[in-house]
Structure formats: C-alpha cells, structure tokens
Image (cartoon, rainbow, N blue to C red; front, side, top):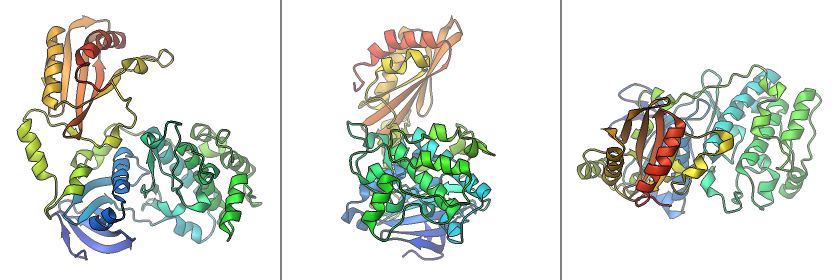
Length: 446
C-alpha cells in the first residue's frame, strides 16, 4: 500500500501525493540517508504489462539515462518490487510552466529565458539521438530558481526507431502542438517536429493563447497544415519573423536548431551551458551505474528489489571485469559493426574513438586485448570495467595509450568503446587498421 510515511526499499520515505495517472502515481519523497527531496513515480507493473506498455516504460527509462542536462528532469534511480516499478527523480518545486501561462501572457524577457532553456535542452536531447515528441507547457517544469526542466519522455523516440527512410512514423503528441508532417502520417524528422512544437510554445508564452485552435479538430489540423496563424500586435517584429521561420509547414525549409540558436533575438542574454563530462557524478546520491538494468526491473519477483542476485551471479562468473550496465538504447549512435573507415572521415579530421559490439563474455574480450598488447609491446592495466593499453614506444606525440571500456547491454551482449587517451591520432589509426581490427574480427559483429 503506497501512502504517506511508507518507506520504499529502506531508502525513500513517501510524502504527499503530487499527481496520478492511469498507471502511475507520483509522490514527494525524502532520501533517508541524505535528506534530499525527490519525486518518486510508482508504476503498477501488472497494469502496464496488461495493456502492452512495457516497451514504452523501458524507452522512457532509457531516454532519461541518455539525457543528463541541467534543463531536463534528472532520473536518479530505478527500483522494482514484485508488483511495482519505482522511479526516483529530481523533485522540481515550481510546478508546470503551464500554470504561469494560464494566468496570462509572459513579458518578453521572461518568455525568452524559458524559450532559451527549452531550446538548449531540446538541442542536447537531439545530440543524443532523442526526440521528445510531446513538448508543451504542461511538460515543462520550473525549479525554485525559475529554471525550466523538460519532463515526461513517455512518448519520446530514439534515433534507432527510424525506418529505412530515416524518418519516424508514429503519430503522437498533443494536437495543438504537433507539426503538420506528423499529422500527415508520411514520416517525419523528429528534430524538425520538436522545433515546430518549440515555436508553438514560444507563441503561447508571449500571447497567452494557442496559435492554432478550433473546437473542430479537423479544422485545427487544416490550420496547422497550412500554418495559418496570426501574431498579436504586441509581438516584436523580430519575433514575428522568427516564428514565421519556425512554424514553416515545410520541414525542409523550417528553421533548424542551429540556425535558431544564432538568431539575434534568441541570443540576447543567452548563456550556453557547458555540460561537463562528470555532470552525472555531481548528483551526490546516485549515478547512472546505480540505475537497475531495466530487464531486472521488469523481471523482479521479490519485494526486496531485483538486481542483487543477478549482480552476485555475474561477479562470481567474472571476478575481474564488472562491465557497466547499459541499455541497448544507450548505443543508438553506434554503427552496427566495428567499421573504422566511417570513423575517419577526411573532412572532419580523424576521430580518436571507435566502438564495436560482441556476443562474447568480458573475459574473452580482455584476453583478446591482452594478446594484441603482448604482440605490440603494450602494457596492460585492468580496472572494473576497462582495460588500458599503454604503448612502450615513443611516437610523434609521446606514447600511444588506448582505453577500452566494456558495457553490458545483456549478459550475452556487450559494447566495447575504444578511445585514444594519448599519443598521435594517425598512429592510433594505423594501429587500429593494421593490428586491432584484424585481431578482433573473430569476436565482432560486423
């Protein structure tokens, strides 16, 4: 029974109910160890499975693991019992942006600030291959400092959701905010569809009402398809021009995120947030490694959680290597095999990293890397989830060093990420082409 005062997993004490839907309730909660306020979303596993929404839940978790950004609601941890799935998330105190707009239109500077933060978050999501597909003021939260946080990735899509035509085909979203090409059901670019929604949100913030609205849904769709809207007289001329370019019914000529971020009206007072590599680790209580593998969460059959036995089994099988748990969606940007030629494009300069997928266990991967290191006089240093190859020869830019990080997607499927950490990139390319790639071809999925 979920109620105030209940302690979940000996870790979180539930507080007041913040909201509820068909399959989930969201509570304010307190981390017993740190005292930190969090929001806990409790999903009924049986209900979700009965209506076939488990893939959507998995996708939402996968997406939130990918998009760690100051303007996106942060997912700290996923836990599970026999009947429930628990999401421990950042508690955003200020409520929905929608509540502000419902009281009337915003001043230009306030609207611009929220719009800038929205676009920065959306741009980051797109860089990780994530398309939100349901951007609207109800899904934009405000923290106690007035900063915007994008939430609710339940309808989001990932780059690998696209068909062979490179487009998405699922019609979803909230009608008034949906791009014309989504309505037309001919396939759409997720990035361009999100930008359209951002344009509608900007209009709403400045006007206090929707650009496309009609009690008859078909009439409203017709207006959206032709981009029939009129800016109120108080809109600044540069905003009117900007909206005409964002709310372009032709996705091929619609303004891109990159062009939008160069716009003079948009840039006024804009401070680009630098995402640090260790941003995740700044969350003191949890890091991505503490989030359960989603398959564990779905298959749990005990009230005490789901992953401990699996973790112990894995450690007993492989006492040296402990690959980082990784969902398949985390590798959406990877090429299907270890094809280094695509990673060394002349016009972009050589890229000092590569990845490959394999179905062999971590011990085999490590043994193979040790063989290569022995042949090429590299020293080997092993950590929990990585192997470092340190060259002994002096190259043009010192000794070549390569780090191989092993990620577990499933117990029988792994991703290995290779990165040059020091030395000359051309020497790294030569080593990959002549030694590393040929030696690994037997264990790679091409």
